[in-house]
Image (cartoon, rainbow, N blue to C red):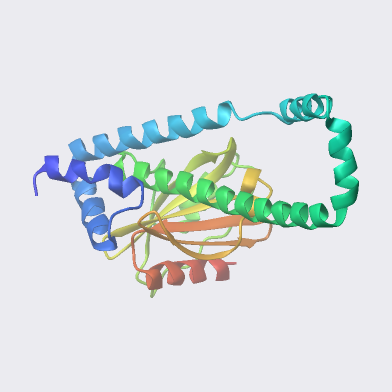
Length: 250
């Protein structure tokens, strides 16, 4: 397939609309083609810029409060309050239902937002000519490298007898919080492992468990105050196997 045809699939890949087989083929091509890797990296950067711009102009709580007070002060507000006294039981039930629905929607939106950003970071790493800052298959070299660069420590698993190879790691940032980004390889598939403090940003709102989204298999859990994410286009069995190794480490 010519590069022009591959590039037509980049946006579909980033939006999670490619079949797993096509996503795997594109991922493999990007690792071998610097031109397509550069194209994908540009698209990821553009996507992240748009996401940041969208967050910048979200209404503040002060603005919402001001609007609410202005509406309450309008003529006829007293009549509305009389009706509220009559309809309190019904309104209370409706409000409770709406609040519960809004809570779960906010939780889902937070999860989609975090997973989308991590998927973008994974793709950008695959497309980069220098995916790691510490290049080593030795966990005793990679783990100490992070000391002083992130505000926490973690354990890495022994991989002897497994199908996984540690390629290295780098520091990454999510919502201005530094974390550890590790790269593993299994049967020519590269898998990203992201580790962050559990208290960072929207981390506390996320549920744990496997996720199949954005053309990637994902898994997440918490351990010792840290939130772990495993992201890759490898099989679900491989994602679970690496997650188990990380959960059992140390």
